[in-house]
Image (cartoon, rainbow, N blue to C red; front, side, top):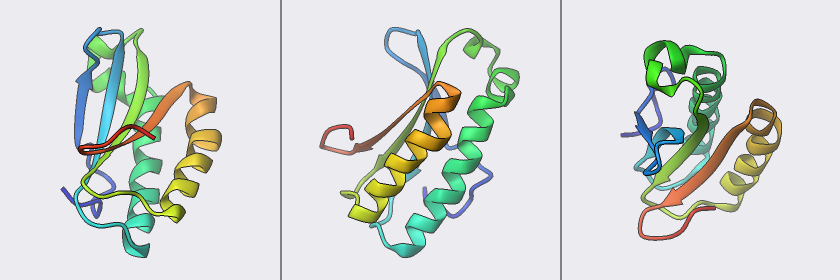
Length: 110
């Protein structure tokens, strides 16, 4: 799935221990300026969905669980994407108590 539809939530899942609800953003294209801009828009909407109660309204089983957003990508992130993720974590996610990570398929979380 490309990042070009910021209004769509790609996937919601429970962690293996079922104590965390994970909202996934799926990025299937190599990272460039367009994809970074699309990620900014998509992540902004995903944080709002996760933090403002819509997650619990759509998925009542999420109530009372920790929340996380995972960006799953097929390609290594660029320096500009990593800087954006760091800033988004600090300014958007941490204040809302939402864990944010990036999973590069076949690699490790950042």
